[in-house]
Structure formats: structure tokens, C-alpha cells
Length: 276
Image (tube, rainbow, N blue to C red; front, side):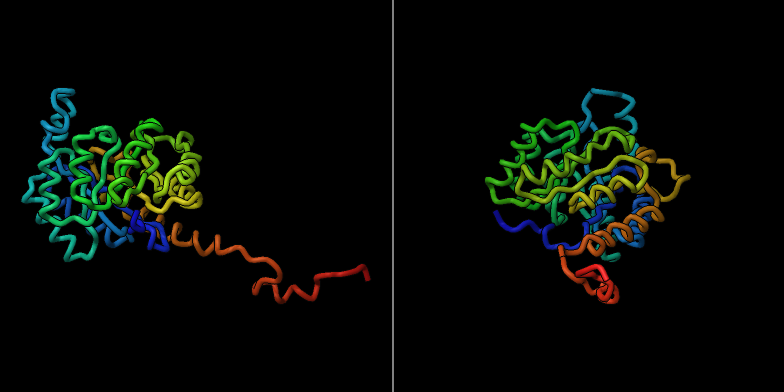
């Protein structure tokens, strides 16, 4: 297995999940890119799909929402070019094979597999054929399903990142199961991150303290922004605070050091060897 590309980052890699919060509007998509870049995200992620292939006949209500939020390949090419100008990494979650082919045409640096597709091996194998690093969310996934997808990528020598995720929209912070991060770190030879669906930033900060290397958070323009995932999204101001707080963590944790530390030198004269 080659060294994972995400292992080289000294600070948590923050992905701003634009998802479908653009409501199918290209201008709004650009605004989300601006917010992600301005407030410290390393990358911005969208969702590329054909509504019929994504949802089938499961729900007319959801189908209507997804159709409204569906962007064309031409739109995504424009967004990709806009991200290049803004110097922020663009990538996307594909939901069908044609979308993978298109994202390959755009030369995305890596892929995202949604929790809902963790066992969609037709799509997973299509992504594996690209040999691109891949991030997989594991909401609702069984341990066996996680083991299988890890084995599939590991066998091909392809970088995989596993994101602990709770598929609840929004999720209550008390239902975040953050101990899963520690478990996954011990179980799998790949970076572990978190895809958080609370509407605050506390949980990804806690997750980073536990060792999460990648943070994925949905973003919105502001609290007045009416979008599909508003309840699980944070504003640019919250994103900026998240960036600031997680960047402090490596400094605060530091490396283990005992004896008289530099900060304790002035107190050394009070260290006693006997009672006076």
C-alpha cells in the first residue's frame, strides 16, 4: 500500500460539503466556493448525479428535490474552473458510472463514496478502476461492509480514507458515537476522519482530538439560506472558527516531554529534594 496522500497533512484536512445546497443555481454554487475558500476549507465537494439513476422510483418527493438541485456536466465544468481560479480543490460524490467518467474528464484528484453507496459494488468498482484516492463515509455500514470496502481498495494499492458518520439529518451531538474513531484507527490501516451532521462545530473538534485526520462539514451561505441540508450545515463564520480551533489541537497536544520543560524553568528553584 502506498503512503496515503492525506497522511502528509500536519493539520486536519477540512472538506466543505456544498452537496446540493446550491439548489441547482450556478451562482449559488460559486458563492459556496467563495465561502469555503475564504474561511479555511482545503477542498469543496459537490454531488454529481442523474436523479433517475440516483433515486429510481423510491420517492416522488425526494426525486422532485433532487431534480431541482441537479446540475449539468457543463455546470460542473464551470464550477471546477472557478475552483481553480480561487485555488481550492474541487471534487465530488458520483452517484452513477457516467458521473465517474465525467469527473475523470475533469481530472478530480480524488473521489467520495456516500454512505448510501458503501455496498453499491457496481459504483465502488467503477471508482476503483480510476485508481484515484477515495474517501468513504460509513453511516449505517456494518463492520463487515467496512472491512470489505477497505479490502477492495487495499488489494489494489489505492488510498482510502474512512469517515465515521451518523446518517441522521440533523444528528444530535449526544448520538455521535465518537468512540468509533478510536476503534476504526486500531482496526484499519488508513486515515480515519469524520463526516459530521450536527449543525455545530463541537463534534468535529472532539473528533480531531481523538485523531480524525479529515473533517467533512456541510456549508451554507448564512442562516437565512433556504437549502436542502440547511439543518446539518454551518455558515462561513462557523467554518472559520472550526478551522482555527482544530489547527490549535496539534500545538496543544504537542509531543510527550517530561522533566523540566522550557515553560517550567522559572519554577525549577521550587522543586524540593528535602524539607527545609
